[in-house]
Image 1 (cartoon, rainbow, N blue to C red):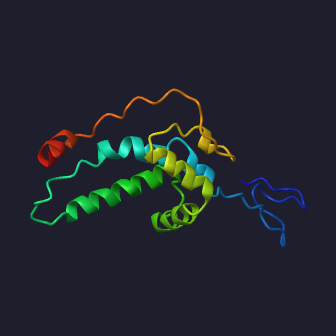
Image 2 (image 1 turned 45 degrees about the vertical axis):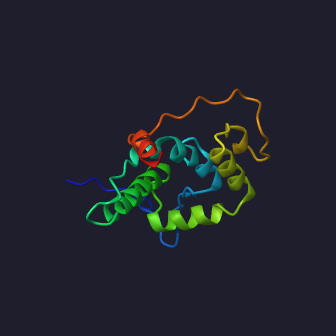
Length: 148
């Protein structure tokens, strides 16, 4: 037999008529998310090793390489902010790329500088010792020999 509730008492989880349930604050993808260590810095450090492309003379004209690159970006986007669809992620990253703070970090990454100080609101060049050179991605040595 079901136990009867006293009059005026609602079962757990049931709200009275006209009362809205409180909404949860949804996390927002912000520039700070992009500045985390698993953001732009991860792209610079990990992507070359993951994006081992095949020879350019492939029969598919590089289509499989392009697919692989897009899939790597999808994986990175999901790791960085799983709740955001990829197309919206790309649109936001494109928008964030116009901000001076992001441009400063990108410049530092391109020049292999330490980016820890660039994550702050007021980026300044730091006096940290230079970073060790990044390991070469598989196949880099072969490509260099072919060019040379």
